[in-house]
Amino acid sequence: MRSNGWRILVGCLLLTCATVPVWAGADSAQETAVAPAASQLSLKQCIDIALENNPTLMIAGERLHIASKDVSDAYGSFLPDISLNRNWNKSDRTDFDVTTFQPVLTDSIQLRDYYTDDLVTWYSQTNVPVGLEDQTIHSKYKDWNARASLNLFGGFSKFATLNSAKHNKEASKATLAYNRELVIQDVLTAYYNLVRYLNLEQVALEARDQAAKELERTETYFRLGSAAKSDVLQQKVRLENTKLDLVVGHNNVAKAFADLAYVMNRPLAQQFSVDGSVLETDFEVEPVEALYGEALRQRLDLFSSQEALAARRSDVTTASGNLWPQINLNGSYTRYNNESPYKFGAQESETVSYGYSVSWNIFDRMRTVNSRSRAKANARIAEYELEQARLNAQVEIRQLHNGLVEARERANVSHETIEQSREELRSAQERFRVGAGTTLDVITAQVNLANSRSQEVQAKCDFLIARAQLNRAVGRPVWRMGS
Image (tube, rainbow, N blue to C red; front, side):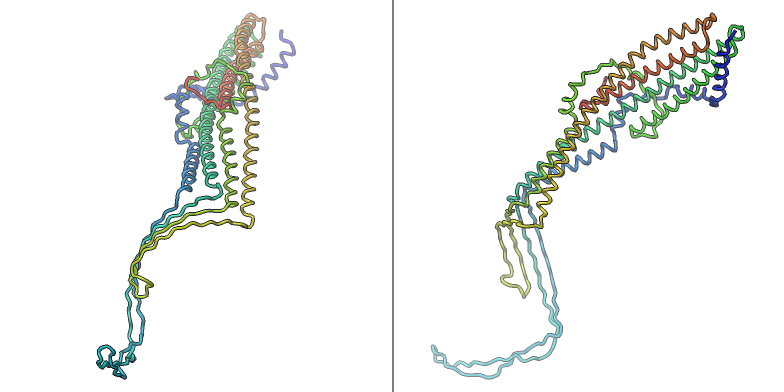
C-alpha cells in the first residue's frame, strides 16, 4: 500500500513529464551524431594546420621583417651617402628683330714707322646699321658629378638608434614565438573541449539507453503486478530527461567542433573525428614555488617586454643627439663641357672639392628637450609595463597551478565515485526487483553514475587545459609530441 507522500511525488513527476519538451526525431539524430567521421585528425595534425598561414603569426612575422630592416637602416647610417649625377642639355636660342651692322671705313691718317721709316696708313672704322633680322644661337651643355658625404659625429645618436633597432628586433622575434605558443594553446584547448563534449555525449547516450532499459524493466514489473503505475511514470520522466541531455550534448559537440575549426583557420572544414586517447594523463603536478623563477627567466612575453624597455632607453640617447654638435665630411668631383657662347671660362673643365662642416644647434625652440623628455617617459612606461607583466605572470601561475591541483583531485574523486555509483545502482536495482526499494532509488543511482562519469571527463579535460596554459605561463613549450 503506497503512502500519501508517494502519491504527491507521483503527481509532481507527472507534472514534470508534462512540461518536458518533445524532440521529434531526437533518437535518430543522436545516433548519427556519435557515428565516427570519415577521417581522423590527431592533435599534432590540428596544430600543424593551425600554424600554417595563421593571420596572427603572419602579422607578427611581417613585424619581425620590418624590425630587421630597421636594423639594416641603423647600420647604414654609419656609411657615407654617395650620389652620381649626369646632365645633358641642348638649347636653341632665337633673338627676333636684331639690328645688324656693317663696318664702314671713314677717315685715314699716314704715320712713319719708327723702325722701317716707311709710311703706314691707318683707317678708322664705324659700324653702320643696315637692317633687322632674326638670329638663332645653338648651344650644348653636359656634365657629370660624384658627391659623397659622411656624418662623422652626431651626438652618439647613431649608436643608440642601432641598439634600439636590435632590441626591437629581438622583441619582435620573442613576440612571434610567444604568439605561436598561444596558437598552440588555443588548438589544445579546442581539441580537448571537443574530446570532452564527445565523451559527455557518449555518457548521455549510455544514460539514455540505460533509462530505456529501466523503463522496459519497470513496465514488465508493472504488468506482473510487482510495480506501481507511478514507477513507470518516473522512469518515463527519467528517459525524457536523458533525451534532453543527449540533445544538449549534441549541440555542445557541434559548437566545440566549430571552435576547433576556427582556431585551425578552417571555419568551413568538413566533419572529422579526433583522438580520444589524448585524455590519458599521469596527473603530475610540480611545486608552484619553483615555477615563478622559471617564468621570469624564460617566458617569451616577458623577454619581449625587457627588450622593448632596452629599446626605449636607447631612444633617450637618440633624442639627445641634437644637444651635441654635428660634424660632417663631404667631397665632390664634377666634369663638364659647355658649348654655349655665353659661357664663363673654358669650354671644358673639371672641379674637385672636399671639406668638412661643423654645426651646433644652440636653440631649436625646445624641440630636442621635449623629445628627450617624451623618450624618458616612454622608457618609464616600458619599465612599469614590464613590472606589471611580471606581477601578472605570478598571479596567473598561481591561479593555473591551483586549477591544476583542483582538477587532479576532482579526477581522483570522480574515479572512486564511479565505482561507488555503479555498486549503488546495482544494489538499488536488486532492491527494487525484490520489492525492498523504490524506483526513485534506482533513478537517483542512475543520475549519480552519469554525473560521476561526466565529472571524471570534465576533470581530465580541465587538468590538460590547465597544464597547457601553465606551460605557456612558465615559458615552456605548450605541447610536445607524446605529452
